[in-house]
Length: 134
Image (cartoon, rainbow, N blue to C red; front, side):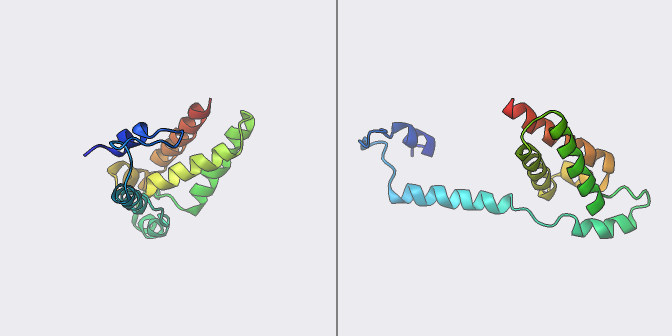
C-alpha cells in the first residue's frame, strides 16, 4: 500500500488524477484517524495542578508552579521584544514548552520538578522558534 505522501505526490494540481495515485475514502479516513490519534497524544493538560502537591513534598522547593510559568512567559516576551521579533513567536515558544511538559517523557518530568531544567526547556523552546523563523 502506497503511503499518504506518495499518493499526494501523484496528485495532479490541475485536477487530473492518476488511477494509481488517487486517494479513496478509506485513505482519507485512515489519515484523519491517525491525525486524531496523534492529537490526543499531544493534548495539553494542566501540568501545574500536580506540581502543587509535588512542591509540598519536594524538600528543595524546586518544583515549578504558576509563578515560575508566569516568570518564564515574561522573560520570553522580554527577549522577543528586545530582539524585535514578532510577539507571536513568544506565544508559540510557550505553547511548545507547555506541550513538552504535558508529555510523559523522563526529560519533561525532570523539567517539571527542577527549576533549572525548566529554565533550560523554556530557553530551548524560545531558541528553537527564533531560529526556525530566522
